[in-house]
Image 1 (cartoon, rainbow, N blue to C red):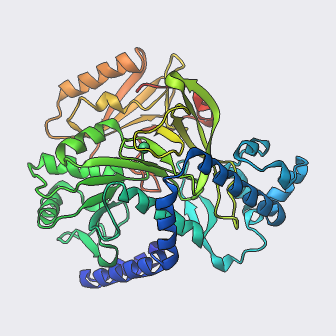
Image 2: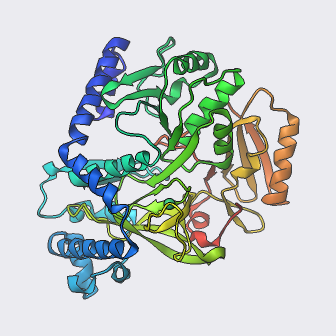
Amino acid sequence: MSLQRFYPIYRKLPVWLQTHACWFYGRLFVKRTYTPRYYEILSSLLESEKWSRQEIEAYQDEQIKKLISGAYANVQYYREVMDRLRLRPNDIKTVGDLVKLPVLHKETIRNNMDKFVSRTSSKGDLIFRHTSGTTGKSLHFYVNKETELLQWAIWWRHRRRFGMTNDSWHVNFSPKPFVPGDQERPPYWRWVNPMKQLILSMHHLTPPKIRAIVDFLNRRYFEFYTAFPSIVHIFAVMACEAGLRLINPPRVIFMNAENTLDFQKTFLEDFIGASIVDQYGFSEACGNASQCECGLYHEDFELGVFESLDSRDIPGGRARGRIVATGFTCHEFPFIRYDVGDIGVWENPQATCRCGRQSRLMVRVEGREDDYVVTPEGRRLMRFDFIFKDTRNCSEAQIVQEDLGKIKIVIVRRSAYSSRDERFIRNQIKIWISETIEVEFVYVTHIQREASGKFRAVKSLLGMSHKNVIPDSCEFLN
Ligand SMILES: [Zn+2]
């Protein structure tokens, strides 16, 4: 059921009918997702995460063979590319052979959407998905049922690492308006009982409503939260501002969709006291990586394989590069060497994780490629949210660059914010970013999200000539 399609009707319903609609939505989701096949996949994932490195590599090579021969036989785009390069399926039998194929960019998919659909699939078996994309251009594509189930099973395997099961009650801090924005009285939440979930809509995290929300959360125990980091962070800041406390905090907060910034993590750990855990995934469903108990990201090798493109060695035997993903399960709409648009830092290949899992390790995923500032000195800087770390008086902050030589610091102030904070931030910028860059402070009550609902810590509105550089020329300050 697509929320967008039914939303105009949903938002006009009385609360009790919206609650029924949410129940129905949850019931449909559970029926469609938690099928016998899903449980089969989950139990095989719980086994495969114990595999040795050799077993993992053999499995991945086997998947590549099947994927490539299917793509060549049935998918027009790949047939044309391979013919042009005089490649036959036999030439690409291992993960290492993938480099023989070109990297796949979003624009190529946009321009050739029909050529990516396998001739053996009927569109009725495929699930349509789209992303809104940081540049506002959406990408449309399909995934098959098996991939969707595998993706959910991978996410639940991740939650199990921290003691959660499908029966654990949880709160979902959502950017979607399940509670219509114009509702002025509680409940500012909706139950989705079949999914053991309570949804809190971002739109109601406002000072006048925060007490009702915290009081409600204090009446009942939820084992974990799932959240966009920027949303749960704003919730915690507002609760703290109002002098409120969570007396029944969750054990874990699972972050999704955005990078968790350092100042958000510190504040949440202090205020809520839960473990902050992350996983990296995307709608195209051709790769995923999930943090383990030791804090490193393990590639979920059952779904696909990552390559590090334009890889640069960095100290400690680590490598930083663009994340390029090849998905194993969706032969009906294959993503082969797909440039996701993110940057990853891979751990030294010789390193092992204390948790014992043998899949490849990533240390972190860094900002989107266009999220950086260009200084008058010509430096390109990403990830400097730490300049706000010691200023606890900002509830949200974003750096926007519209012109070379100038940045705007957009801040949502907490009540204790003063000119001292502004001076402190100005000084941090001088030290860490540039002596000469012009800085303008803009104070707002709310920072605009992207079409996808995501928050961007650094937003560059410079022309494409400045944006489209390979990010290995960027500096990462932490
Ligand atoms: Zn580990």
